[in-house]
Amino acid sequence: MSMLSQTGLSSETGYMAQYLDSLALVERLHRLLLDVIKDEFERLGILEINAVQALLLFNIGENEVTAGELKSRGYYQGSNVSYNLKKLVEMGFMHHQRCEVDRRSVRVKLTPKGRHIREVVEALFARHADGLESRKVIGRDGMEEINTMLRRVERYWTDQIRYIY
Image (cartoon, rainbow, N blue to C red; front, side, top):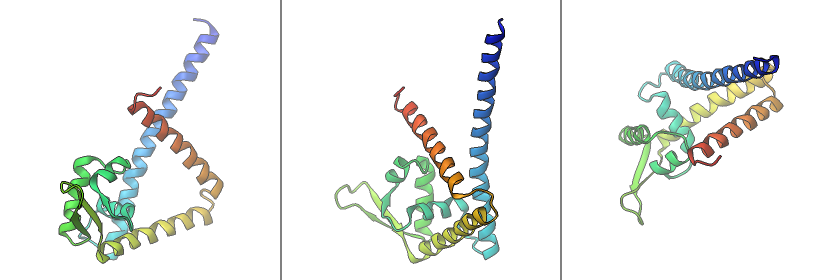
């Protein structure tokens, strides 16, 4: 094998290792985010709702949505979102109402209790954003660069799903 071929192979292997490291980091960050939310809720004595459900409430915000819309936005898996929406309605964090046009579809929106949870998560995220910037962990430009790169990966993966090469 020539030196050029060995260098190319080593470069590809290095890139693959970095890609796999990035994938593992994204997974760990998501799990850590859920742990951070859980920890905040335990500190505040909010024990009736889990971190996944709290994040769901945060992402819904002031919108009125269907489970299908949440899935199509890429936030959640099908059975996961349906189960959690049902539980959130049962616990009084969300209202639900059948759609007038499509009776099979149910629209949900936050109750005042659900909005309170959303505000708790929003305050947590605001503290973290301030801390990241004030402690110079990552500045605005760095955050923008990370988001740009992650959106590119998201687009690439979306294209792969849609068989666009």
